[in-house]
Length: 232
Image (cartoon, one colour):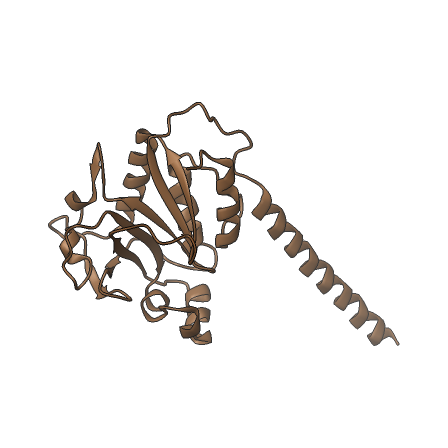
């Protein structure tokens, strides 16, 4: 009887711990990093966030009045199609093996997921894709946010500082992308359960003064909080 009582006690404690973890996760997901947003700031540049279900990417214009991505990375080298006329770039950060070998949810393998989340020193990569036109909202979850030129430059600076550069200051292309319009590049930072692709997206958005959730390990809370910003 004593053993049964102890087992019941431990079971209840375990259930309480699980419930507390779920409540804290939900609280963090719905709590913004800032409660008040200054809508009086200028909204000069459209940026986009795309939700792939478990992963999020940023989509940025190739050119603005004060920035040109072609100065940082040659557009013709992004994909195998050598296109130099892209109008937009999608950029995301992720774990090296998982990102390169998992083009769709159907390609997810449990051992790859476990390694990406729990191995202590996972290397990372940047996935860059070129677009002539924005993805169709009928087929993908994409949201537009307008930010000022100054905030856009802060965003660009954050993203470019995540790329790994060679001795000549050039980005390092490490693999072809999922299609002819994309490629993978060496990146700075280690991927883990504590800092994943969506955490990186949220960090980039915060650099641009865009509101994000306090807990941003999932893509859905990031998309939900974008409604509090200067939407397109």
